[in-house]
Length: 245
Image (cartoon, rainbow, N blue to C red):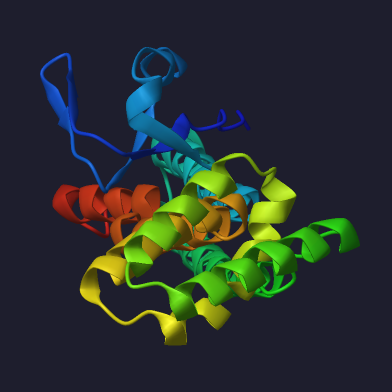
């Protein structure tokens, strides 16, 4: 049987754009061609879950193989004198496909849960070097002292934000793991807003990748069906008369 080619790469749309009369809305995931991905690189971010994509390709391949065998049975002269045997073979073929898709769908759902669990586990295991943790303690302890004695906490946090700009990703991650220590000392809304800006920078150093992947997984499982080819095939067969498969 002919093999299903790898599907176009999927991308999360960060900003709305239009291409050849089609709108690609922000906050959604689309399949783009390599040329589209290159042209609109600043608007998109690649979404890849290899384990899920493998199962989707297996489903697509099963549907393609079924169609080929179904059409061969439909047109074979072997059954011209025994239409009941043709109908039986078509029924068995479809039953085999239905069972295979059921099993693959269950496998897909299990893979989704395993992917979620793996992302959660790895996000909780973010680690840093001893040197980075030591430097982070110095930064956080100094900020805590300044927040305790200043009348303008927002300025302290803006200074912290600027200082973190000069640190490497490992130190930022270590500070992020200790940042919660500063929150009880922050008293006013302006300071909380400044603290949010600091945390955004820290999050990008360690946690953002995991949060993004979890978000993409939520969108993918909400908006995309792994059995789309199978569902479309069933609809076409129903329109064609069901038992005349």
